[in-house]
Length: 285
Image 1 (cartoon, helix red, strand yellow):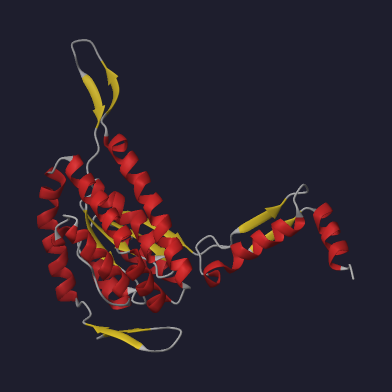
Image 2 (tube, rainbow, N blue to C red):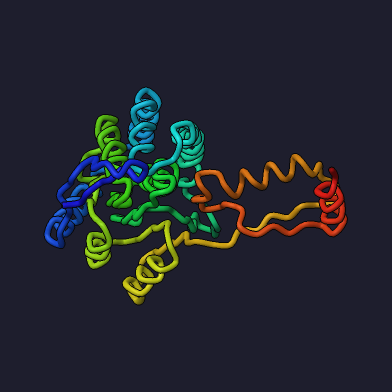
């Protein structure tokens, strides 16, 4: 069983059955069988389901925020901020997906011959998502994935599994078949089992170590692999800034979400003129 614990109080929130190699394989097979029918639907039908899901999330925002805070530990206001940001991200995909899917005519010749590029879904893809922004980061994959006709096996982090299950239930209510968006529950062993299956792509956000293992597990299989891993994000302070405003912004960029952000400020480069002025300010009585 997978134990979900509140990181602030150490309270046991839930115990959930973990997926095994057999249940993961069953979910992949069901997704493979269901994906063609999902792709065959008119684009506007898929778009309507995602738009409905966005509305359901907005209606349930307070409960979803409390759930995220209990599982992940971020302050309630920051959980609400994440859900508010999610709405804008979904709107971007809803506004642009149809254009991306349009056929592209790349050439023509006498006699009516035409060269055309058309776009089709990868098929069945894995979305191994992050725990620090499970609503926002996960949507970067499963929203465009579903809009473009893929089946998405969604594996939330074992630290925010209830959040992932809550997202999925709203997606089902919005009209996406369960087989098209199955949730894989568990830790590293469940993720490893998912990578062993015949999937057509893997999209992961998380640590360098796990990303390296995913790259090694999928090497040579000629499938799409996208890894967003930890970095050392720099900020540069120019010579024309208001020092107090810049300092407050940099502190927020480094410490927001307890520093547990994909783009948190981890290195700061300061123009020498600003460094000199900062030293004078700090020396004031």
